[in-house]
Length: 328
Image (cartoon, rainbow, N blue to C red):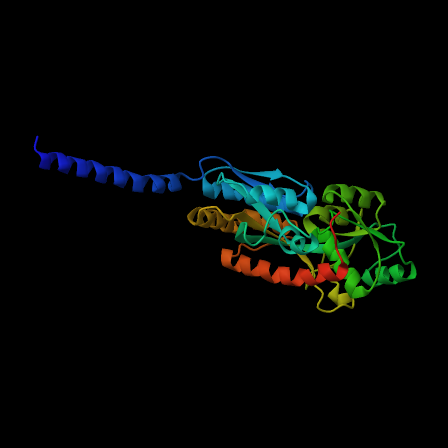
């Protein structure tokens, strides 16, 4: 065989190997996800976060062709889960971003085990959840003005619960205390579920909780809703006025939840996840479920979600510093 023929064959083999090398990553990308996707919720079961996560996960699985399962991983105001997911390299781990972990913890903790802006890639704002202000029915107040008057006549007598320091409920109550110039004792819990147990039993006087977790108790009279933190009244509670309506114009407090991926996730895969999540939350079945729980489905673009996070960080930095909110 001539040297020219050998060289030609060698060249062809090298070209084929090179082409195969170019094809393999593309084939790998097309095969993703190759296993079930884990969606980590950095809080205990029983709150609005789990409702939003499970609603989204169910529909996302249909668009990705793989199941998406929810894993609750509470601890340290969400820091435990955020740290773990920030370091995840399996390309199949996501996390539910939240007002607390993304916009409050950076200012509440002297040092975080994660950087909310550098360690994560925003994918989409999934939903906004109205913050409701609730009292136990035995408390002799019918509306927010009654509550504020009672609190001022009985300084340091009222206590309120939250799902933990820096949680959305904690922020909502501190924000209310700040604008109404009242004092109430904060009792932090390890999640919304344990907090609600004590509120329903009357061991707590009041709390602010996301609507999905408490609508059933309001409708059955086990809890009394005296105000909503939304700009307008919500359809599920048309007779409950907003905080703004009751004398504090411009007041707004809503919880929010978005989908985040580790910043190391390949951009093309991140786009695929974002598209699936946006489609999932905009499915009629998802919207019906969220609306029934008084949550508003959003489904924003990654860029819009990133801008939203920046704005929320600026807003809550001032509240955290003024209220001197510190970790447990």
